[in-house]
Length: 79
Image 1: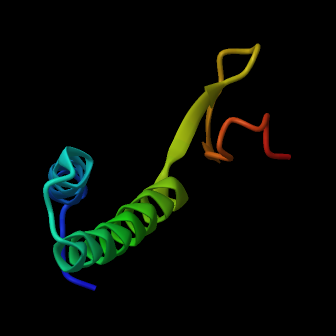
Image 2: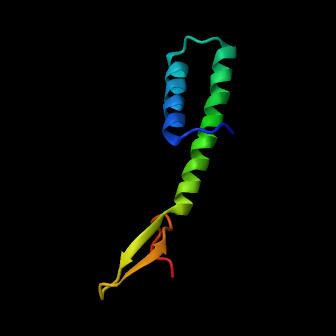
């Protein structure tokens, strides 16, 4: 996959979406843009998955001690 930054991929995806919604493309043009949009969606998803894996949350317990825990997507504390 092409090396995109998340923001670049999202911006390009928004541009593609706007062009598709406008409805003035030939079938071939629309299909090509749709395929590119799918690739960009996969790129964005991969970037977000990698970022989620790197997130760590600092947690302060009742005694004021700070510990480092992995982020679990907001599903509660990790044991």
